[in-house]
Structure formats: structure tokens, C-alpha cells
Length: 577
Image (cartoon, rainbow, N blue to C red; front, side):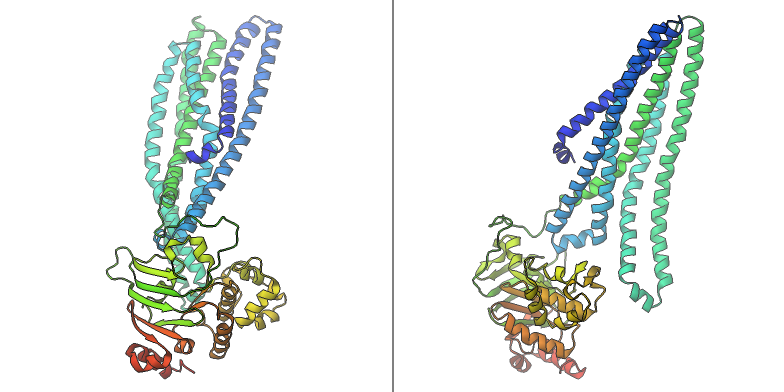
């Protein structure tokens, strides 16, 4: 926060100056008003009234202009701080590995980037509006009140500690409430997100009442927390007004007696009342900032936890300037050498001592039962996760020696979950190649067996795609993701169970086209169906994180019991053509 403020030091200095001008104007006006009463109104001197009235008008104009300018600058700087903070948090999230993202939770990261940043932004507005004015107004009010009448200033000695005690009790109670509130907001958002994404499943199993109750519980806890904090904040104003009104009554009562006794002028009493109110207003402003501060502090802690997280996947300094063409590999094999991977705190590794070579110009397929480590192995290649031990080389280079951007620019990925972005089909395909011409898009769609259904759409390449591709079927989403990967023109292609939603005929045509289109590259295909991998030049069999066999389809049927078992079960269930 301090670093971000330093980037706006000129604007912050201007805000401080304008706040000082506004506050000094507030402090000066009661003194001038007292002079008008004592030197002009009491003797009936019109010239004094006009002269001092003009001074008061000039002070008021300057004060109003300073207040408007300070408010405008404060709002602008606060909005820019919020924007920069969101940008930094988003950039940090993008640098985290899948492991760190999972540890925070997707919904928590969304809340931290949006709601938490908004709370800090709102607090910054209050700081720019009140934090400078409050201490100056309070200290200046005390000094000028003493100047008007020392004896009457004893009221301040009683009132200030009472207000400070109220502030301490309320702020102390608010801090844990705000901390719990942000966590409850995370949980409520998580439940809501699950229910929206899984709406069809909930309806299919007639679980609407159960899910409604589950959301009601999460929402109820958040509501109770917010209600408690809101009641504390709302209770502050009546307590303060009681103290302020009692103090005003006391000042008028005792001040009136002093004026009657001739120990104090009427103008001085009027100024003293104004300064007492300014002192109390300064304390109220400070209390409001301090009451809002705990929530901002909790949000800052949550954002700091994200920003201070060191990615488990370390990035090396880029070897090429940003904006240049990606460095092209001349071609080469992909090799695993005793690669293992374990999650922190796990009892057993997900992958253990995996070694193989995937040749350029051929397809290497990976099969295995659910939970055998296939997707984890794929995630090691673009370094979404980093191997715990061992080495992975591409074209003879250890992938951990490459900058992440360079490595990932040379990989084309069709993920297990077919994800598309809001936009058009063309925009989704150009995620892989921003400068691709329409003809190249159609070539990729032809390879992925997606051209036919795209041509049937009214807008074809410009047809809209809903968030996550929800406007398309599962098979259509998979084929578009495959087309996006094919468009990449990379030396390494990864297809992580990317054909599971396709029928056998479409899948067979797609495999034939891939062999022709990607003959220049290393191709890794992860699949559950034996029919998907039967024609691969090399098939690797994973079982419980270990590579237990490798070879062609025919060789594995003869030599690998695990592969035979998988193939036999699918044949019995009609899973092979």
C-alpha cells in the first residue's frame, strides 16, 4: 500500500495541502465570527461587520474550493490505488502454480481480488478525506479553545477520554467480526458458485431443497456476522451524539454563567462552542476511520497472503524481450528421467521414478486407471506443477532452465476440462495464435472435425460462445479446444483426455487428421479408451504413479497384464470398435 501511494506522491502531497487549507479555514472562521460579535455587533459598528464578513466569505470560498479539490483528488487516487492493487493481485495469481491456487481456493481468490480490494479502496477514500483533517482540527480546536477560555476548557478533559473509551471498545470488537466476515463471504460465494455450476445435477437428483438449505445456512452465518458489525457501527452515532449534546449543554451552561459574571465575552463563548464541536467532530472522524480500518486491515492481510506467496514453480528471467516472436525449437524429443512428484504432506508420491522418451514425429499415448497420475504427468510439462525430483528435457533442454513464457509458447494444450471463453469462436481459437487468418482457423477446425458444425451456425466463425462454452455440447467444446491446440503450431502437443466426448467415428477421423497435421512434433495423448491410443507409435501404461509398461498396442496385449485388463474390460463393455 505504501509503495503504491509512493507512485502518487505528488497527488497525495496536494491532497494533504488542500486538507490543511480546508481545516485551517474551519479553525479560523469561529475566531473571525467572535470578532464580528464582540467588535461589530455589540458596539453596532457596521464597518467592522462588513470588513470581517468579507474576510469570512473569502475564507469560506477558499475552504469550499479546497474541499472540492481534495475530495476529487482523493477519489481519483483511491480509484487508481484500487485498480493497481487488483492488477497486482491478478498478476500474482497468474504466476501461482495449480498447487497454490488450490490451497487458496478459486472463490477465495475471486473475493480477495474484488471485495477485499474494494474495501481497501473505500478506506483509502476515507483516509484522504478525514485522516489529515481530523488530527489538525482536533489539535487546533483544543489550542484555540484554550485561547478563548482556559477554565471552560475543562469540559474537553472530560469529554475526550469518554469518546476514546467508546472508540476502543467498538474497534476491539469489530476486528474479529470483520475477519470472520471476509471468511464467511468466501464460503457463501463458494456455495453459490457450486450451485450455479452444478444446477443441472441438483435438479436431476431433486436436491433443490437441500441446496437451498445449505445456502441459507451459509448466508445466515454471513448475515448474522454483518448484522453484529453493523449494529456496532450504528450504535456509535447515538453514543457520540449523547456525549456531544451533553458537552454542548455543559459549555452553554457554564459559559453562560461566565459571560453573566463578566469573565468571558459573548463572542468568545460562541467561538468556544464552535471549537468544542470541531474537536468532537475530529474525534468522530477519527473514530469512523478507525472503525472502517479494521475491515481494510483484514482485507490487506488476505491480499498480503496472496502477494507474499512464493510460487512453487520458479520462473527464470526471460531470454527474449516481451513482444518478440517465440523462439522456435528446431525439433527434438521429449524425455523423462526418473521423474517423481509428490504433493506437500502427502504420504505417497503421485508419480514415482517415471522415465521414457517421446520421439518427434510420433504419437506417444498414456493410459492407466483413474488416479494413476496421467493428468499430473501432463501438468508437469507446461510446469503447472514442478517435478519433485528427476529431469524433463525438450529438444535436449531441461524445461526448468527455460523461462515459463518461452516454454509455454512452445506447447499446445487441449486440457481435460474443455474451457472456452466468452466471445466468438474465432476469438477463442485465436487465443492460441492471435494473428491467425480465417483460412488457418478453418484448417484447424477441419483437422479437429469441427468445421461442419461451425459452418451450420448462422454466424460461423463469429458465432458467440457463452462463458465456459455452455452454449455448446461437450463434443463441440472438445473439438474447438483441439482446434485451438492444433492452431498453435508448436513442437509439443498435449491432449489430456481430449476426445472422451466424441463418438468412435469422429474420433477415428480426428486421429487420422492429427497424425498428418502434427507429423513435425512430439504428440502426447492421455486417454481412458484403448481405441483412442491403439494406433499410437508408443503406449505407456501408468499404474499407481509408476510406469509399468511401454510399447505398441500389440506388444502390450502380449506383455502387460495391466494393459490387457484395461483393454479386456473395455472390449467386454463395448468400449472398443
